[in-house]
Amino acid sequence: MSQIAENIQSIRRRMEQAALDAGVDAGRVQLCAATKMNDAEAVKQAVIGGVDCCGENRVQELLAKQPLGAYEGRPVHFIGHLQTNKVKQVVGKVELIQSVDRQELLECIDRTARRKGLRQDILLEVNIGGEESKSGFTPEQAMEMAAKIGEFPGVFLKGLMAIPPISKKRGDNCRYFQKMHNLFVDISGKKYDNVSMVCLSMGMSDDFEDAIAEGSTMIRVGTAIFGPRNYQK
Ligand SMILES: *Cc1c(COP(=O)(O)O)cnc(C)c1O
Image 1 (cartoon, rainbow, N blue to C red):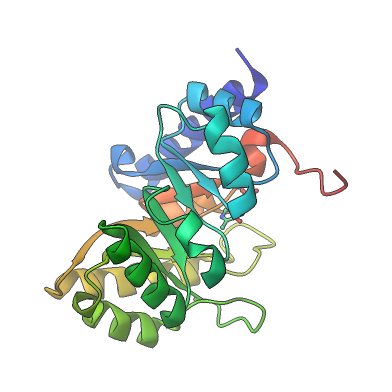
Image 2 (cartoon, rainbow, N blue to C red):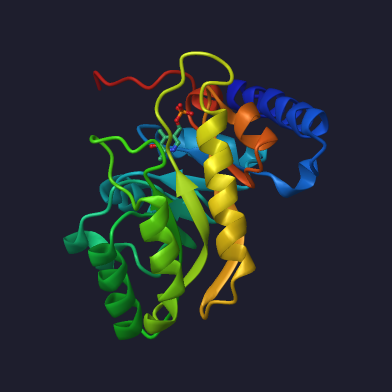
């Protein structure tokens, strides 16, 4: 078995344990491979290893790996910062755009999808740590945005995504995950048009167990699957 497949097995065991400890259904938590800076061959290994989906950060990498069949057999998501001038290269090419972090981007995705005659599934990215350096809606803005998604027939809202501050130790991010879960439940309780809240995407290599304990339905894991990224390359 490849190292990548072994890593995925061990992550699956940790996911199950975290779900068991928290008393949540392990089957409802999906594993998304965060594939940035890993080549098509490594991504294929992750697909064979049994991840539920792949998430790309950069349009260039998506467009390079997709023709090589990197994601074949699994859906691919977009999870990185998306410039509006690249939207047309992504809409319809991915199952889900997780990183819709501003209204301007949402409007652009909506226009592009309608022009292509399709409807793009999206998540709203929430800047739950209120960090200067990060984009994303505030929880209040996300609530308002969800309420008016019906005005944008080119998109369909499937849930929320968050990248909380880097955690230094186990438990650091629990409060952010809790806030996200509360917001997710609040929006789920409303009956907005073009909204079906099924995905709460949060938790990465260093904190996915806490995210699962707080109600994550999708963790996005890079390093723990592929090993450290080589930023020198
Ligand atoms: C890189 C990345 C991840 C995974 O990070 P790791 O710490 O390597 O697991 C998850 N989500 C997003 C949006 C990322 O860019």
